[in-house]
Image 1 (cartoon, rainbow, N blue to C red):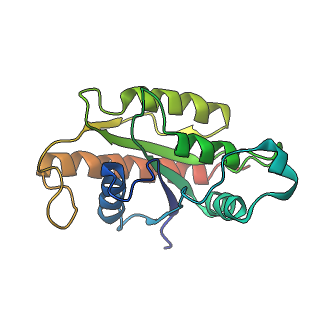
Image 2 (image 1 turned 135 degrees about the vertical axis):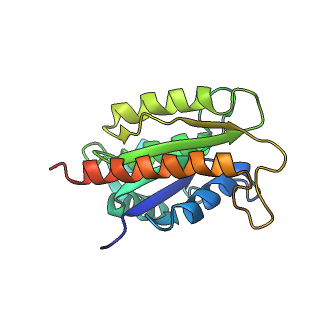
Image 3 (image 1 turned 30 degrees about the horizontal axis):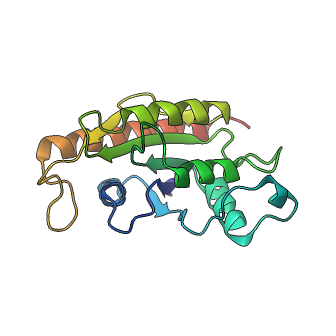
Length: 187
């Protein structure tokens, strides 16, 4: 049986992002259930509706990756209590041009890591509002709004703490069921 293809969107453009580390750790942890490949956001130009008639090559590539995926895993930071500009830009490009919404009926899951006590909860609430408008089916539970702490990752970049690893494994199992359920819904 073929594993579902998942587009991983990391909302931070930083090469050393803690959310990139989390996304990579989730990809390894879920490798028995998914084929996870990152869809880069760094080369997307700033959204400009004037480009709808002739979408730039990076936008066409991004839209094709989202459309080919069976689901989307979004791992992003919290910037000023909201989503990052890179992630919002990618979401906007994916929804355009009018009538060509690449997000429609995609199952998705959200995770995030931040340095503050609230984790990424404020950003995730905004993200859920945005995605619901675009007909994305976001996994409601469990919420993965984690606070960064020393020792979260081991030397290989995997989740070091056994309890956290079990929690994230459960999150990925729920996401696998979510993807399977919405994969059976007729368009």
